[in-house]
Image (cartoon, rainbow, N blue to C red; front, side):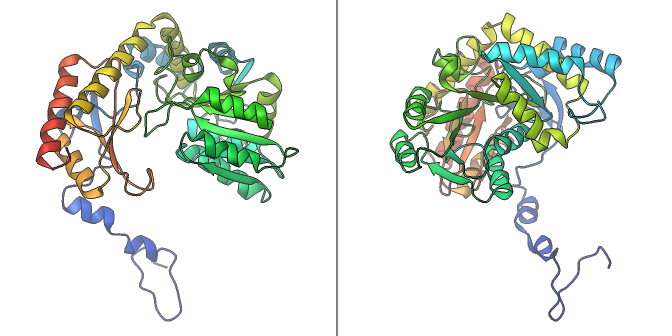
Length: 410
């Protein structure tokens, strides 16, 4: 059959017909308002070049600016010289390097756990670890605003074991969480899964309350620190440090594509739990391992985070400045308390119009609509880096105020 567009004839149905019928993206491109997949040509500290123009980057998860640090780049290049560009195998077989294990030991110590295990991406970490930990006759309880990778890990668990109980509770709502826990038989194992800092809301999980409920009802806690490490806590160790208690969660997960300036992810816990995940996580066993350059980049970033806590302090100062600024202007920033600050619009058309206003005036932000957020809660997701200077931050607020008033948002 030709790869060209096929028309349905008679009772025959083409599985690609939905692709031919999908017009939303093409229509947006034609009208010049398509905001996604725009290539970045160059990074210049807190700014980028896109479509030949320099823009202030207010939409990156490179929270500490370490992906651009010369020391991190040099470490990655040296690892390629020593180990090559790829491990060419999974961790389970020939893909484990000595530097994998060195990094894992250092990460475990960093988050206050006994052991750690690296995956090739953060997405694969949640996919593999959650599906390994939850099985037939067991229950997983999840915040409704948890990241998609958490939900996909849960969906994979359901696909593998149809008798897995899946329960969702309203965002950070401890009363509803208790109702869910109380409704599960006491003799059936339970895992509560939560983000530490929520990727769209920018608020922090109520971990002390989660811990109290988990202990009361015999549950364990799995904590995703993707947007927490480098962002909250006095030295950037995440939400456990924010609450001054590393025992608030048994299992800690984090990605390397945010504060660590690389790509990959890790899960940490007791030796026994990590060893079990290592032998049952399909996304680890059946994927090529994290490349040497990325391992070395994370190792150097970890060293910098430990030795230069002033980066974390600066990011937290920026978060306070921008939260105060957007609130003063009149934007709804929801419950944000970190460097992830949503401008909640609620209307898709106005959200895209505000994105375009930002972009045309030299500010790069991210428009987010359903299903990434609940219906009628579309927003502009802004996020900040420790390397932003005050002049650029003031310019972001200036454009936000001008655009918000012109579009009738504030």
